[in-house]
Image 1: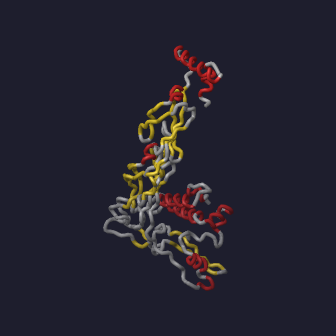
Image 2 (image 1 turned 135 degrees about the vertical axis):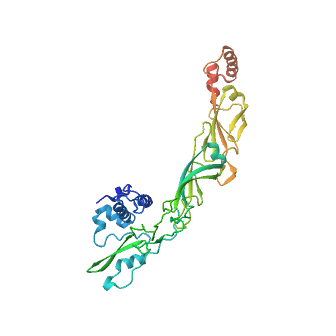
Image 3 (image 1 turned 135 degrees about the horizontal axis):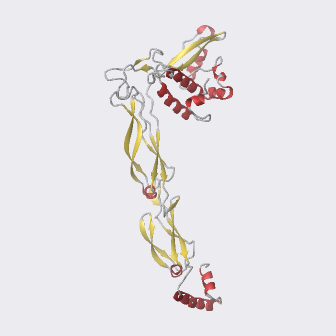
Length: 373
């Protein structure tokens, strides 16, 4: 017998949603109404059986421990009962016990099904994340076919009740034992659980009722978003089935690095290099911020690695853009490795004056202690 995990193309530690997605993809591919190749119907049945086993925690655990024998023995493998209530399972299990008392519960005909949610990863520039704005995106998703209005049937025709399951979407097989009659429930292979079949399919969508389309959307990025921020765009996922509502679109944001700025929460960080004379004497400089050029005052005697703050020039707080962080600027001091003769003479005069006052003479002592406070 085939390995059910390999059959669905999932790993042994796949979660329930991953298994469900794999099953849907393969079921559409090998459905007898779609795939007329030899062996497709048998493959479709195997896929259904694999999903029945792996979608239920108990049967999956037995399968993982004992293999196919653990789910195909007497009393094992009750089929696709994932959407049956407790009363349905109880009645299905004990139907026919002690002479066949009670009536079997029937699964309700498939009603509207909500469409799948979609995910889109979107890259933003640094300033786009800071200030937000509108972005135009393109998403491929399933839309209702406008030719058949989502029914999947050719114009002028309608789907008919499945003759195999009489519209329940399930087939039941009763097995009599000395303890009574046990019922095995599985997805109807003719309609794939839909409860109806389409004889004359819509030529536009091939009977699916939905078509893959690429849609343009404009979404609003709020100020202050960061890496991993998730935006929900309501009703822009895949269209639903049988009149069901569409799913949602989830946009995950990723912010590109900036050559000049870094971010620490709602604060912006940057560095600026000044000369040793500017550090000694102090000055006013124009520095770049996310808001544009701003004048910064360097106090006299500024030391290396001093951090100066420009208030309210940081990132707006997400959800409260009136409140902003600060821009923190680290001061780097450029001490030259070479100076002219004239500069050296001037510095030596200054060092001598400084040395006379402190008792520490010499240019090296003067420069060495200048930036140690």
